[in-house]
Image 1 (cartoon, rainbow, N blue to C red):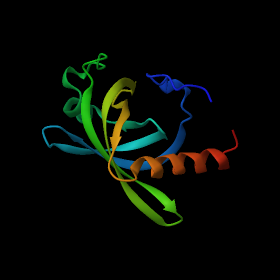
Image 2: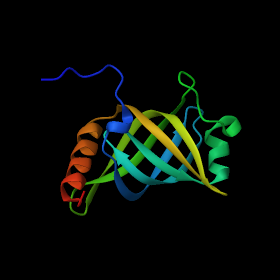
Image 3: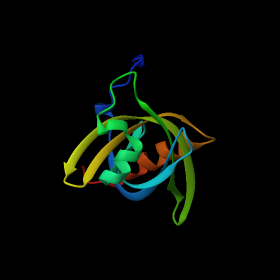
Length: 134
């Protein structure tokens, strides 16, 4: 068995495109909802408008390593057909990119999950990867 690196290379995690929403809560308790564009076992990529980015990312500058922005994300994944479960994951905004005039991508890296959240995400991603044509 190969040893696992202490710092995972997030680019190597297979991402799957999804169309759902996530509630993002900052440490001050403020919340907003963004669209999730893809998910992997290690994080989410969300799409936000400029107003949302202003609220989430002070100064609208990509967070530097060590100055990541702590957030709690809440989103649903279907465990079995038509039976979604809510996943609550603590994590950090580690990436920000403007992709259109009023649209930004935010990368949120998971740090911890409540309950069985990781298993739900892992199973969901595995299922989507096995049914995709890639």
